[in-house]
Each structure stands twice: as structure tokens, then as C-alpha cells.
Length: 87
Image 1 (tube, helix red, strand yellow):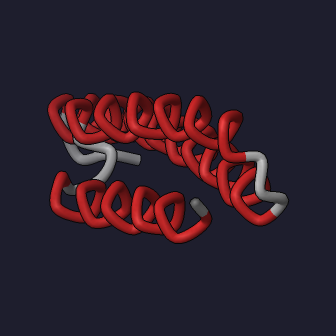
Image 2 (cartoon, one colour):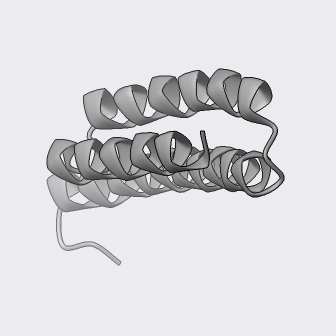
């Protein structure tokens, strides 16, 4: 049990944030996995479309503070280089 009202509220708000961030990270992982499967199977056109979707989700995650923007930029760089190697 929390010692005072403010700490109780902080527990509630941090739990809400944890759930949001967890779902966003899960969606990101799923989207990245779809992209890597498309790259491995050499479906380049579909992979380009999926890459746009991944970038959109990464940008939203950075904006919401789910992950640090530098980490997300590094992911974007690695994904785009994977696509260019496949081409």
C-alpha cells in the first residue's frame, strides 16, 4: 500500500504507461519480424511497403517516449541497410 495519495497516483499512472508501452513494443516487434521475413524471402516490393509501416511505428514510439529516439534511429538504419543489401 502506498504511503500517501501522490505515490498511489504515481503507481496507477506508471502501470497505465507500462501497459501502453508494452503493447507498442509488441506491435513493433511483430512489424519488424514481418519485414525481415519478406527480406529473407526476397519479396522486395512487399518489404518496401512493410518498411514504411515499421518506420511509422518507430516514429510513433519515439514520440510517445516508449524507446529512446537514438535507439529507434539505429533500428531504422539497420532495417534500411538490410533492404538495400537484399536488392
